Image (cartoon, rainbow, N blue to C red; front, side):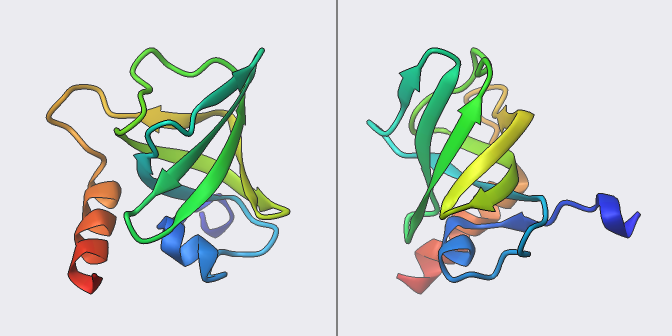
Length: 114
């Protein structure tokens, strides 16, 4: 079980170097407005917890639910400062009222530290 665990980290924790080196983990936050760039099957975007942001690269088809300004969680690993999302590793909220609990908690913590 320990080898299959994917821990959740905020963009601030990623920037602060608190992620496991060479291991898969999850990062979540809000997709920064205006950051989404697409080139064929490759998408790049930034995720923020409103304190810091981290760049994400994803190769594949993003779900129709994926939008800028909304909460997402991505699974993958950090490569040269960019989070490389795994295939099928980007999850988006499924309706206007839902935000992944980890993202909501991270945003609340960030707001308290401002």
